[in-house]
Image 1 (cartoon, one colour):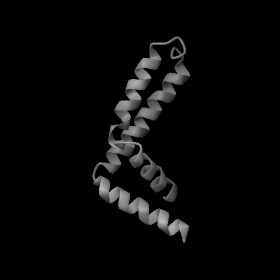
Image 2 (tube, one colour):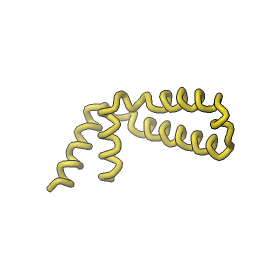
Image 3 (cartoon, one colour):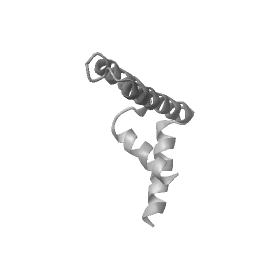
Image 4 (cartoon, one colour):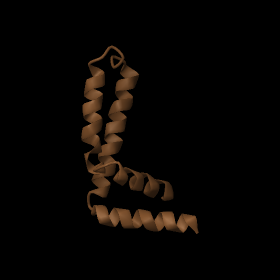
Length: 81
């Protein structure tokens, strides 16, 4: 739980984490147009990454950014003690 809280907390400093699946999809679409992106294993990993990112956003979407930040701060504070 602490690791997830830290991960989400770090994401909140990187911009709107709710848009991460869209950002990933854009990057992956560009990569797929290259020779390097023509790899089945890589494509499977990219799809898995997108699914995980979408699932995380789906789970966290019921909470406000402020609620998520508050929980992350509490968990990080407990870890420091």
